[in-house]
Image (cartoon, rainbow, N blue to C red):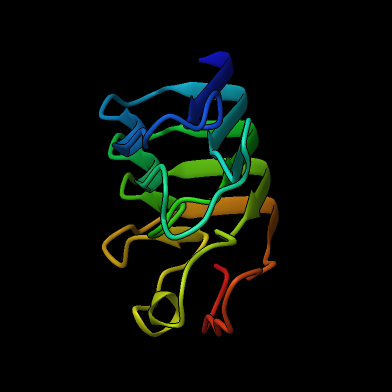
Length: 144
């Protein structure tokens, strides 16, 4: 999968778009190259507030031997990435936590890049998560 851009919301301010996951990979031996998965933090009317355009997870990987190059996932309202497959690899990952969540986001333990405890082998190189909790005081325990 290369040059995939997924966006939930942002095109207009008429209502709210939503998705459970933007991309879910259930096969093994998949390569992702330059993918950007974005829950809109603004639309044509301005900034998005109060969990508008809800997306639980940007990327869920269930297959083994999946490799991602140049992955960006932004603003989803639970874990941004859930990696459940073995022998996965990521080379450069950039993410932004959601701007519009409240303090409960931090207490629920959500992270940007989550590797399941059952995974026996995983590599991540150049993994970055940053936050700008614009609307409320939010304290996350960990980014990764």
